[in-house]
Amino acid sequence: MFQDYHSTGEYSQRDTQDTKEPYIRRRLPKALIIGFSKCGTSALRSFLTIHPDIVAPGNEVRFFTDHYSKGLEWYRHQMPKSTANQITIEKTPGYIKTLETLDHIHEFNPKIKLLVIVRNPVTRLQSQYAHHMYKISVSRSNQSIVSFEKWLHLVPF
Ligand SMILES: Nc1ncnc2c1ncn2[C@@H]1O[C@H](COP(=O)(O)OS(=O)(=O)O)[C@@H](OP(=O)(O)O)[C@H]1O
Image (cartoon, rainbow, N blue to C red; front, side, top):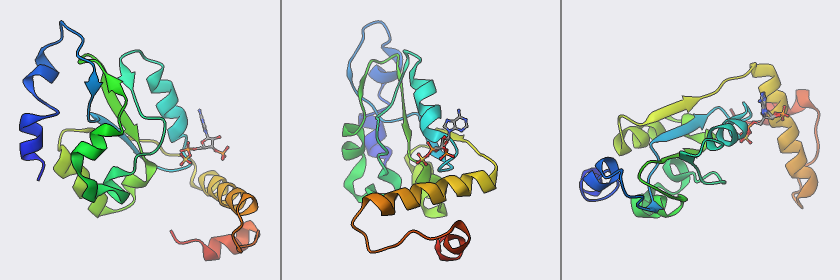
């Protein structure tokens, strides 16, 4: 599906070989932070983008999960502008959740670098619970605040 795009677009010779002149444009990611959620993925993105040669969008693009049908040109337009020497990365922790999504990523670029960060599963879950309850408390949802123990039985994993 992506072969034509790659041969004419993102990974063109100009992109990879012409490093003398800065050529500023939006580029597809060469590395993805794919998970796990609540394990410090935002911090990892922030730490990596301190490096001047790494750029990333500030939001979760969710291309391989929610916007796959929009195509690679849409995905590229979500990326910040970069020079040929910079590496674009993207962080969407939900990418690690299903095999279908991982297949999409593999089809996009089988050599892409995947970054996975893990955490003690109990504290990770407590973080997810706190985030979920916070969202309920600030929204007009008719869901109510429940205890951690009750939430464990309600939440879909
Ligand atoms: N450096 C470092 N080390 C350990 N833990 C850290 C670090 N930076 C952020 N955090 C904690 O990671 C939690 C947020 O994770 P994510 O950014 O992956 O959340 S999200 O999935 O993008 O919503 C969130 O956890 P909780 O505070 O327990 O909710 C952050 O505090």
